[in-house]
Image (cartoon, rainbow, N blue to C red):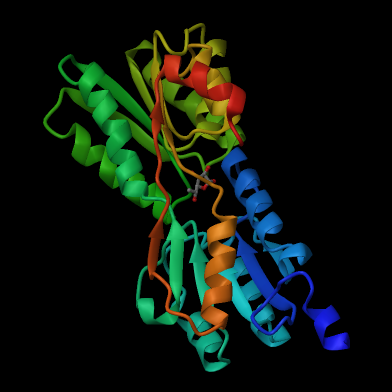
Length: 305
Ligand code: GYE
């Protein structure tokens, strides 16, 4: 009968379409594009969802306004990739008062974990440690001058990757000349690297870019300064996007730590479980690998993002 027909497509437990508001950071990087695509695909109509998508242009105030608007629209659940770790208490309490469950994806927040049901993402501190361990092994026993391109100030990956990297290189001969934000974008990675090169010139031996895109932007600045990336300046980045691994295979990057952006299916399953009243894991961490130049050549042909 009619009820059976409406159940087709295997959506929510009672066959009703699930309306989800997703507050994405913006569209700053290749990683972000892959994450957005994974989320849109997992939360598509064929899986029983209606997705209301908002990209906040990496402005915390835009993102909080988007979450408020989801609450006002009475969505069934809210998913947030928080731009920054702070400032969430009030709006998450409003969601709780409205009985709308919140699931965090990708980035974490400070404060009470009672205000959200689950977090699904990657271990940013471990990524920083893996990048730092590579630097330690390859450059740690000779005087090395490093510059750092940090991610968005106040974001969980910028904070945790810095912490992880610093702890891994402590006690080595690697010295930090300078560390500034490049906002996870190619354009700012290039501009900030130009500034570093003007200030420190050939003294720079190592660049830690906290994502591939900033490292890719920096390549332009390094070449324009007459230096050879991957040789005069060794480069370690995080994400493992297709473009990042291509630069690695081409010998312009030296090491890339993966950060898996394909979180959509796990987030969608968690939303369905929460709405069905099932218990879910509070912390769901994706597994990441790391690549040197040879491993990048092998991985590229089948790389999914
Ligand atoms: O590394 C960067 C993106 O939050 C893990 O955000 C994510 C980071 C990712 O802009 O490329």
